[in-house]
Length: 196
Image (cartoon, rainbow, N blue to C red):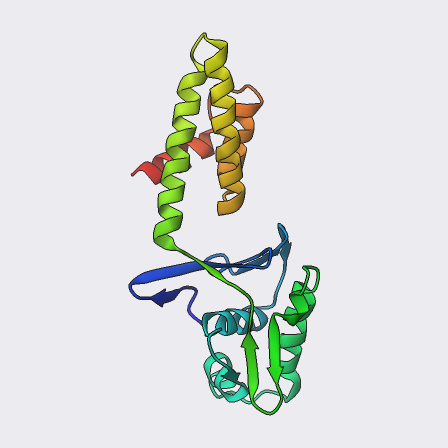
């Protein structure tokens, strides 16, 4: 079974971004243009394996050995996984062409990929939580311009919550934008956990 994270030069990749898509290795989810596209576990693993090795052709036997670990599978199982991935990616321009088939050899992922590491994600989350704390403080101010700044900061936090896939952060920012001066209990607990 493919590990949920891929280590590169002491950094842990937790997400791949490509062609309007995000493949989150922690949650094992594929988002295409902001919409979740459910994938079966083996199909997800095939896509993750191909992206992690995108600089070369991946032989069918390598995929079989790495993902099915020598278990006997029907001839069409891998082809079905590739077809399902192409179908999921097919809604983005050129999405079906992101995986090239080299007849008799294997497959290669050919899209431009941005790797997001756990460290980058943690720093971004910390900055977002700090902005959210500043927004909460500004909302207590009697000055209208402070409230405008707080709303702008909160909108930035909301965008980060969407990008980071954190529903509790979206809830917290939504409440602040709607005039709630305090965060919901669950969001406050999550913020405290991040600060710790």
